[in-house]
Length: 497
Image 1 (spheres, rainbow, N blue to C red):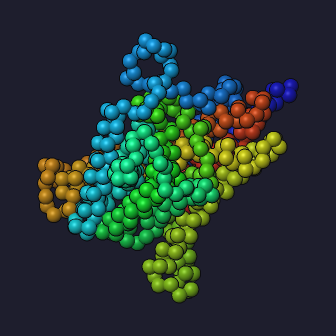
Image 2 (cartoon, rainbow, N blue to C red):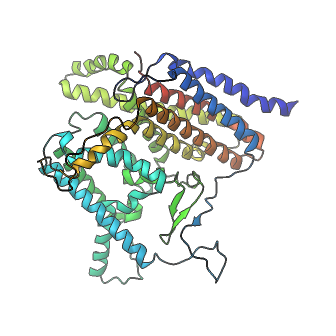
Image 3 (cartoon, one colour):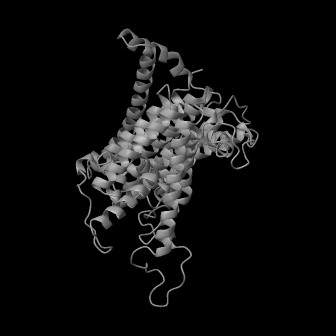
């Protein structure tokens, strides 16, 4: 009888969690260009998403009884059979000459693209839609690279312009110091471990502030100057503290894209060979440093504010918030930016609080682990949700505005050039229907949250001795996932109207 009650409890909890979806029931479509006449009401999308999560939880609790994602189990692609040992044993040694050549080529391409962004930003037409730099930074770089990272792995690491430049500078400095190829004198300074990934968090939140708050966000020369400044800071940091150490801690974009790349089924090994692994299996081994958990929550929080700031509730209340800062003596523009800055900060705090509540709920099941240990143990489960929010909120931007790179690449300065013969290309807004965009957005949210739920369940099976205890520990995580799904759909709806 006791086992039966334990098996039915997930069903009862899931039914209760469905009540969280009452909020989106009256919303219309938003988050895309113009209104969309959906073939199915929005409330039905919301309830369907919750049902998928609940069914997934029940399936995990009954069928997923042993950990499946804690070990990557890499298998090298394009590898010839070895006659001197087991096929599964990895080849040791440094990257091959061909691998190093490909890395150098990718780095050169990254540097060339960065140079084009800076050049077009300074010398091109100071009109956002006619300048290569604006579309490349906000669409290709900020939205396109996360998608590529999830599909193909850590693409940005190969093309990272400041990383490539720092590695080249290290090579030159090594030759000047007389260092041989077999000796590594290490970085000049030791990176302070207490800093952890807080600098990376500052970089990501700073870029989100630039995109969502700063009034001159689409000024090409401003973007070029900021890009050049960031390049300089990253280059100096890598030369002082080491390319990998600084890049893995202080480079916000490198850390962000590297996090998303852990979702990918593709990964490169230490010798540079391409390997395949189970999707999501790269996340459980995520190294957590100071600030990592807050960074992951901030990725969700910044995208949350992007959706919320376009909704009715924010539009109705933001003028009152702006007037508060105006009464304090700020002029119109600073008051506006301060109001939006506060909204951005509150959204990040909200995501941190929701995750914290879920962890406290898990903690209430068993006193075996404290809240800090559980916070770190389940932090990686939020990474698929972060990507789901990005894809859901920016999919239409990537699909439509991403086409503009075709004619902007041919006329990067906006002066009428036609270098590639594609300057006459136009954006095709009929490539996909509004309803299809909604299907992709909802599917992204559902897939992201189901992935997070699977990762949480898999980690619980490791932490707790009995599968039943692991399942009970995840009741609160189910509620968190349903809350995130409901909130994500609400943000995509016409909030507050």
